Image (cartoon, rainbow, N blue to C red; front, side, top):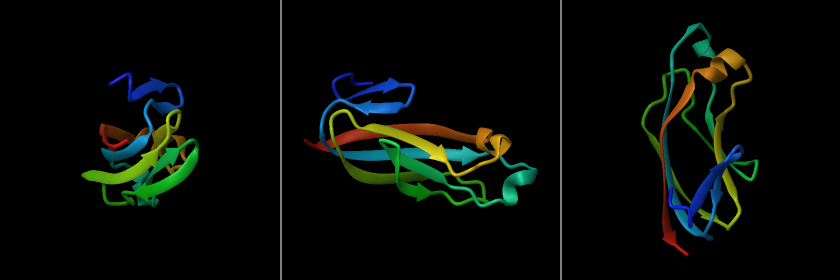
Length: 103
């Protein structure tokens, strides 16, 4: 991590420099018996949902990419809409990248 631009705490990625960021992540959910439920990955900024993607039941793979204006101190986190603990534990983020486009 570029400590000037980001750091990590128990809530997510803390933004260290305000600006417009390109945020990309890839994820997957391992298939199991509960896979018929429609679940999605969710992107949060400061605990508020800002984007959903990768609707299941087809195992989601690939990259979700978007641009977002972020302020110093904002916290970015990614989760899933799954309520079921077992289903939630199947979700995995394989890659997350952030690039400052403009400050």
